[in-house]
Length: 191
Image 1 (cartoon, rainbow, N blue to C red):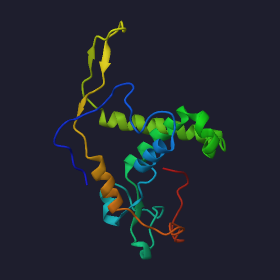
Image 2: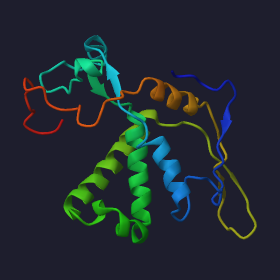
Image 3: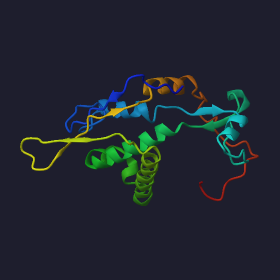
Image 4: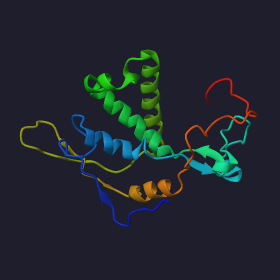
């Protein structure tokens, strides 16, 4: 599932680069973000695969029904991280989103906790991967300080192949089928 591009990828870090993921909210921008975050489905793992993750198979783990293929409900990490980044993006345009997104006003305390959680998740992810690529600086007319050249080279994973793998391995469970079996034990609080 994980494949790296053979050639280094040059990021376009220009301040006004017209990416589908940035700018004032539009249905197209929202759809692009949904595709790389919310639309990525759950994955099924076997008991052995859960153990290989270093996780215990406890009575609180969410199991899938045998008629839905059995196993344990899991998710890749990147859609959660991108969801968090999207949540922060939406907050930066809150005048637009607070009208249509009930999360913005139904429970302000929970919403703030969610935003803080997202900042913390992204901080941990960035510090874990700690990109050591180098940013050079240029002299630019009209600027008195050195101007950073954010068009840097990176060894990237093929994201589209990862999305394709996630789609091929997605759990397709009917509505209402992710439910309790009756033998689970609730954790006293979220992990």
